Amino acid sequence: MASDEHRSARSLLWQQIFRCPHRKLEEAKPTFEEVLERDPLFAGHAFHALAISTGDAKLESLLPPYQEALRGKYPPRERFNTIRDLGELGCAHLLASPHREHREAGRCDFQLLEPYRAGRVAFYIREHLQVNRQVQGAVRDYLRALELHERRFDTAVLRARNTLHRLYEFFHVKPGPRAQAILFADDPPEGSLPWWVKRLAKTEDPGEQARIIAQHKIPYPVATSVIKHLTPALVVALIEAMSPVEAVNARRWLERGGWLRDGRIKELYLEKVAQSAQDKRASVVTMKERESAKGHDEDVEAAIQRARERKLREGARIKRDTLLAVDVSGSMETSIEVAKRLGALIAPLCDGKLRVICFREYAIPLEVKGGGQTLQDWEEAFRLIRASGQTSLGCALEKAVAEGFYPEQAIYVTDQEENSSPRLIHVYRGLVAQGYDIIFVFLNLYSREEAVSLELEGAGARVAVFHFDEDMSKPGWYVSSEAVIPVLTGEGPIHLVDRILVLELPARPGILVSS
Image (cartoon, rainbow, N blue to C red; front, side):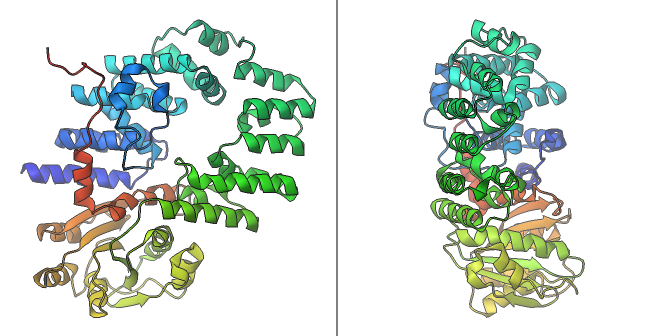
């Protein structure tokens, strides 16, 4: 019974990982609370894995006890999660947990957040969970560390002034003299970043404005909010001050303003985009799909594609031979759209073979030209495919085997509503009898049905189920899609759980020593 309870808890978390809350953290609250209740051992490690994988801070910027707690654990050797919302939820539910080792781990993970994310976690706990001494202490230590690093504090004020103000106020933390002057008295000391922003707003000399931006790396959203008239020299200074990720996300702004028609600006911008391949914070998917990163300039598109390809080559790889089985039975038009985008995401990661087979009551092998490296390749491959007919999940795997392809893992994009033979469980049992085994990953589309995956689990198969409920017409679905990559690149879902469970929870020296 305990194992069923644990499996159910882990299944719940897999489902939530594939339902990105998109800043509505409270929508995921019931799932995280249920996982914690059913399997607190797994929950603590899993929540920590989610949180530490999206940490932002440098270890040396933390207070010494937290440096000691996280040394050797951060940055993590394996990145289990790329969705910041889920990292924040993991941190919040650790901090609010009834188990002291969880609260201590959450307190350590909280120190790694960017200021705006620290605010989101703290106020989510305040509004939807329960503030305890660990939460209060986490916020106090976080703000104290921030004040000790003046540049980091000043940058936080520029980017998240209201959030910092609320953290001090609601958690009753007394600011130091410098923080008081900058944040509450609006009288920043000379030479501080907020002081230079005030100076930038007052001067109307473009040369002086460009010098201030370049010398002090004023963030471009802040600079553009106080400068009335932009010039090419100012745009050059802004691009130089951008991080590679900011540069990619500034593409639409630059194109709309016509700034990329200037040869010098375009050359500088392309150089900055190329650097995004080396930025650990740059998401493989958001490079292509975030609305602010979209545009029409072909040179920029090519530069982003090269950076994406380089990042993919240097990241985790899919080494197993993989079958992508796509449900194209009646009413499964969404399955086709999801498969195109998922295929364009995973094909560049594949060192093993990738085979694509659509299925209704019969199998339809699909050839994706160009190696499936671009979304256009997948659009062309699916151009003549329409959703119709009944559903046999087993026929796709049966067809692959009949053609001599024995996949090591199979991704099913489906609703799991099987109503035609051959059934997947029968095909799987036949392969097991021949000495073969397969890892199954299900992307359940707008459906709670799990009869097929439960049958496979009952037969001893390794199975992960992700529930995909995203609106394909809205931006953000791509963030959820990226969550499946760690399962595909690792040794499979069961081994992913094992790797999460061996993560050591951080704790400050002496804190958890029994008296």
